[in-house]
Image (cartoon, rainbow, N blue to C red; front, side, top):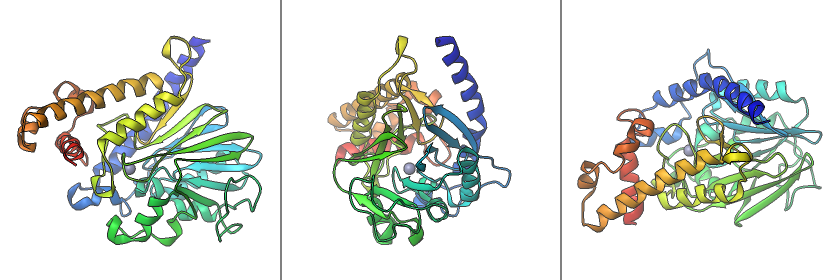
Length: 341
Ligand SMILES: [Zn+2]
């Protein structure tokens, strides 16, 4: 059994490589200056970019190559997506969803505000249709019936609809149609309980992780990425402490299978499909660096002095970068600023 799952996982990882390369190419195209990295709206997708679909387990699939990773749950009730990728990729995402199911797209859940996760909202929502009444816990918005519902934590809508606080103008069609403000929001769809949990002040101030209970899959959003240090959007209420809390929450929910492999699968915001052991390794890395930076701050060091002490040194070969949109220096600065607050 374990051999089979290893095989499947190996093939899955190989299939993901292309998508990851594309995702990185997309990020490389943006300049980190003046917050452009968080907008992504104008980021071109190469014409040759392909969306790859990977069956995770149960009713859940993962789409890579559209910017942020997309999770798709399908069944007789229709289709639910977690995140929608970059706007420029939305037609390709739609085509990839149609390969998985011809049922109506009913729900979109956004893990957070950034356009590499929400840019396809409008196009994909308009291709879908909301169930009016029935199995949503809570009220349906005014747009019920016209399009798929877009569900997110309240601050996602705040930041999309108030450019002054978000720094970028989001098309109104991308805005969430239903928001929640409680720690948890539940749906029942395609015979499966789906639990949305808000993680306060983490990657942003509007992060949601999504747990598919029966399929046993967690969509982590950008609280968990596999190919770099965690990105912390301080300007939109992010904080490294919340990132660690979010990683801890994922570890708390997830159940590993034999020898700590497999079991609950985790779809990261960017990068390859993971199991709990991957998240534990990443959580330890982030926690160790947080503690080192805190220790240096406690000694009275300035940010420059903390940078010079290279608190990430041993992890840099795997996660570090001195160019691109999220450099090691930016990560250390974000940890420093998080702890100074
Ligand atoms: Zn993000």
